[in-house]
Length: 90
Image (cartoon, rainbow, N blue to C red; front, side, top):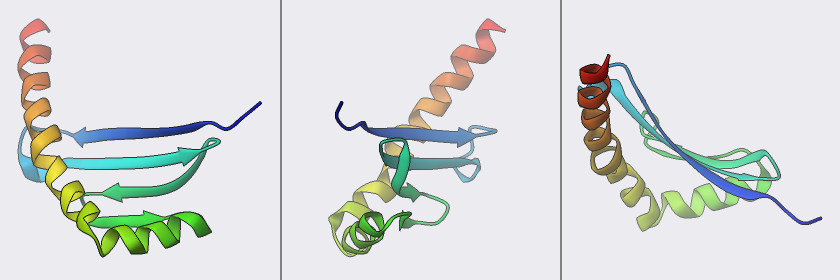
């Protein structure tokens, strides 16, 4: 009994170039995607009534600025590490 609430953060990439990296931050409730930020879109998108209202609010506040900076801070840094360690081992 209860609710399942989780968040995924994904870095999609096919090279270490920043232009080839996408940052995706998604929020779920009971396996249903509620809201997501995709760096290729540059804003939050809601997938439910609750998600749409939050996306509007987050896109007008500091949340969208923080999410836009996460690609550089999180993905670009870690993709470089993944490439070096992954390619060095293969």
